[in-house]
Every structure is written in C-alpha cells, then in structure tokens.
Length: 93
Length: 460
Image (cartoon, rainbow over all chains, first blue to last red):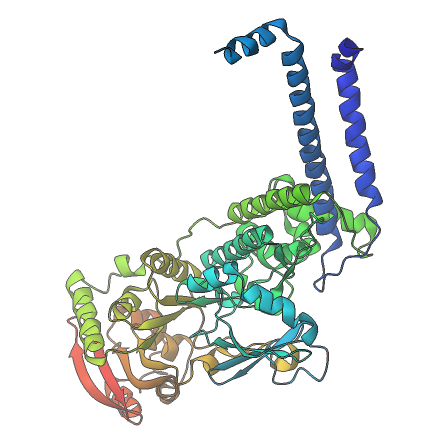
C-alpha cells in the first residue's frame, strides 16, 4: 500500500485531481456580483480571473506538494534504520 | 456624490464623498457611511508614513461626528497638473506610485478601489497620491483587483498607444476613462498584437469582449486568504512589469538638443545669458517661478537653485521629459509640463468644470515669469499681438518678469518670419519696450553680442 502511494502515476493522478477540484471549487464561487464603482472591463476581469485561478491553483498545489513531501520525508526518516540509528546516536550523551 | 448637483465640486463621481476647492482651501466631505473606514485608514501607520514621505496628501480632520459627514482639509498642491500635460516619464512615475501604494495597502488589509492618473498630482518633480477616498477595506478572500481594468485603460493603454502608435499622451484630454482595447487593436501590427505585454493588455481582452459581446456582471472569486494575497501580489508584480515594458525609450526631438547645438549662441553668449538669469534670481529671490518655453530646464534649474519652486511649460515632449528626469534625479522642485502658452490647456469634463484651464491655475501664482527665447515664436509663429503678450505676462506674475527680445537680424527671427517681413515690419525693440512698460518697469537691460537683449521687468 505504501509503495502504491509513492508510485509516480498515482501521485500524478492525485495532483491532477486536486487541481481539477480546486478549479471546480473556484468556478462555483463565481456567483456573487462585484461592487466596483469603476467599470472593471469584462475583458480585463476575465483575464485577471483566469490568471488568478491559475496562480491560485499553483499556489495551492505547491502548498499541498510541500505538505506531501514533508510527510513522506518524515515517514521515510522514521522508518529508515539508518535514520533511527543517527537519531539514537545523536541523542546519546 | 449621491445628492445635489455637481456644480462647483471638483470631484463628484465617487459615491463615498466629494471635494471642494475654495482658493487655497481644499475641503473633502466624506459620506457618513464611509467616514469610519476613511478615518481608520488616515490613522494607520501606513497613511502616516506615506504622508511623512510626501507620497500621500496630508489630511487634517475638521469634523468627525457620529452619523455626520466627515470633513477633511488637504493642503493645496502648489500647481495642479493633469495627465494630459505630463511627460511619458511622469506617467510611468504616477503608475509606479499607484502600484506601490496598492502593494503596501494589500498587506494592511486595504486596496485601491479606483486607479486613474487623476488620483495623482505632482509636487515639483515628485508624484503625490491625493485621493484618500480611493482606499477601502479589502475582501481578504478575493484575489482580484477590480480597479485593474481602470488602471489598464487609463495608464497602460495610453502609454501603449504613445509607444506603439505615436498617439500623443495629450490626447487623453478627451478620454476621461482612457482607451478600450478595441480603440487600439485595429491599428496594431500582428507582431505587436501578439507580443508582450500587448497580448494580455489588448489582444486577449479585445477577442474576449468581441466574442462575449461585452458587459455582464463581473465575477467574484474566493480563495484562501493567504493564497488570495499571494496571487494579488503576483498580479501587481505583473502589472508593474507591463508598465515598465511600456515606458517609451528617450526620444530626441529638434528641441531636446537645442541648448547644446543652438548655433545662434556661442558658449560665451550662453554663459552671459545664464549669468544674467542667475543675477536676476539673486536679486529677486522669488518663491515661485514660471518658465515659459522651459526646454530642457537650463534656466529652471537656476531658478530652483535660489529656492524657488518652478513650473516649466514647453510644447516639446522630449525636452520636457528630459527636464523632468533631471529634476527628479536631483530632487529639484521643478514641475515640467507639456503645455502651450499660445493654446493653453482648456477646462474639460462635466459642465466644463472638472478641470481648471492652464491660465486659471497660473494667474497671479508666480513671483517671476521667464520668457527666454520664446517671445519671437509667439509673435511670428503664433501671430499673437505684442500688447497681448505683455498683458498675459502681467496677469501671470505677481512681481517680476525676465524676457528675451530677439531682433529682426537674428537668424531664428528670419527663419520664423519666412519672408513675411512686411507683415512684421512694425515689430522692433521700441514697440516691445512701449508695450511692456505699460505693465512693467525696466530694472535691468543687457544686450548679448549676438544682438539679443535680456530684460528684467518689475510689475507696476
């Protein structure tokens, strides 16, 4: 199971699903009207929305990826005998 | 302004408040609904810091009572100017200030709700943000800056039109809300349309608007607050990159090298003229000087060196831009404007009342007005009667004036006369002195070896 989770295919699928979910969630949030007293310009707003969604998805993915890698590195270090030995060695007086 | 008419109100479009100008008093009324938010911003560290740095106009609270309009007083900026009188460098500096302010507001939970060059004035060579009502609380979950459309229309597209199509920035006089992508798109080459930054500034918005048929309710977008702030910050960096990509390269004009290549002046004569202006300035010690036909600012800088704040008008964009850049680098209180004394900037807008004419702003504002090497242009090229020039000068200055008389034998006079000698045969120094001494007394008169004559006049 652990090996399956680390497979590149599964990871790619997971990331793509997360990105799709994020975009879908952002699309759902399109409903309320804006309260700008200046004309936001539909073309400019469209580009800003598209750019912001893309950038938001990237930031979100990066954040998620960092967490996954931290979690994986953490579990790898704990399960590694060498890591355990080092920790033990360092903790000895 | 939500009630009454716009008469006698300097700004009235913002529903949050209005601005009234009475002489040197600038009063702002803030609607009770927005009063608390406005006060909160004015009391913030950011507002205090920006005011101290001279980048945000100072605000003095006159009255702040519950459920009543908030009354603020601002100091009057010495010489109000409009974007259609700015040089390309001034446009970019004003855009930079807008984005920088927006970037700093973001971290404190605020944002600009509008972004037009009309929110900026120049205090000497430095831009200053004057519309405190443009600042509002930000929705922390929104990564959109809704004023970006206005920023693009009023800052980026005029600069793009100037840089890529050669449309003068002065043409924005008739475009309160700037240009739309559709205004520029048909005139751009395919290469320009798909190159950065015009691709995302003109082509894609144009194609989207064409397909969608315009308008509709603008969308809202919600993200986690940290992500929304990071996205906004990234967007501001992108807008700043676009602004700098549109900064026109310094262009030379036939006037921008005038001071160094003018062949009707020897170095000695030029030095003699500078010494005369310097001596006059030492004698007058003016607090304010108007330099009409200021070119690249050689004489404006002499006036600034005695502590005067200087406004320099010139019709040449390149020369004025060079003047502004030098003043900005040296931190001099010189405001160069692209303005023509023979065709002064008119009042525009609703009721012809949203901006002041050039002459209204200048009348009686200056201790000294300089007209060096410009009088023969007014008389011969613009065909203004000499008596009118003298009268105009007397209306602009409170105390004195420095004028250069160019004789008929001068090579530049002959160039401008273009064979119409008969028409101007009455113009000579005697007539000049006769007309000017109706309003002024002669304090100094010095003739240069090239025949030109420098006068220092004192107003009667």
